Image (cartoon, rainbow, N blue to C red; front, side, top):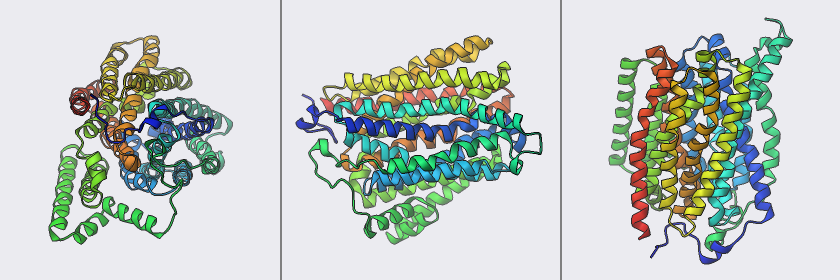
Length: 517
């Protein structure tokens, strides 16, 4: 006998169908996510020029791509995810889109490592609205039996945007550099700077389109009857400020002190411990920006978890006290260490190790990754929906584990080959199977948590992917590349993250099986 899990639909929800407007809204959200990853991924194809002009190493580049963006993307995703549970999701998403597009444009005005790093932080904060708002919207546009497929189609924007960004980046940069002699370009901008400006500005117009989307009833397929949009009164924004205080240092300490001296002492101990660890890692390994940013992130996440336990026990139990959710978040996050490292350094690996032209890499690697990733994430979601049609969500986790194991074959071939042709042929299958994991992992999350906390739970899901995968994967691969003077070695050693990933996913699978008996 299968027991109902948290967030499981009522009988009406099981037979409901998505209407035409739901598919229209999904198409708009896919465009948003494409732009999200165009802005995020543009850095990779321009890596050679950026490294040269700003005088940075592979480790520095890994920090710019991963940690500077990822830590703040993860942290602000938490209060913004809670805001998405209380306020207009279409309004919040359009605001975030305008912010990250503006910060992408400002990236084009950066003249040194720190300026570009600051702009990347801003991009991360703005993009933190995308996942929680979109996942929550899709869960109310589509019935449970179609949610994983809808979320997977939405997630295809990751790969479509990432692939398109390579072509756009090289095209704009090459055209700009050929059109203007050295020192004669407007404002003295290099081609890579012009590319950032060109892709950032149109996002503001798309934000107006997003704002026009209708807000669906929350939890309508679960038999709930919340208003379509929450009144943006003072209490909503007071709650948002409180949520910021629960995770943004140093306000976290003040929030903890209001709960009493003991809570303040625990928070201070966490702060001193993470600061000490960051200092120790800086002394041992260098790269102070990496460890300072990661230390802030770890401290903030710990503060948020404690605050959530005190202020919203239902959300805490659904996210931090559920072995299935924790197992998926950590396990998928560890897998993301590999996928984000590949995403960050894949184009550079082809250019530097094989002497491939940047334009060819943009077309072949970018196109293959976009096609493979988009088809794979949709396939993963659809397979997850099919195998879990009877409510056994543990089977979705098996799809994630299977995709992880299957990805080892093309990834390994990419690392051992010395033929650029073979490298090109491995890109599609590698990204196809890697992305299948996202389709089923995200589909599992939105189906096993209560409707009221979906936005917050989605933020926690992205927390694992970014704090573990994005903040550590690209930096680790770049640092190992610097130490061994081989990007191939750096990309190979990052595979050590996969055995513990399988372990945590196994914990999630076992917990769901127990609940389904």
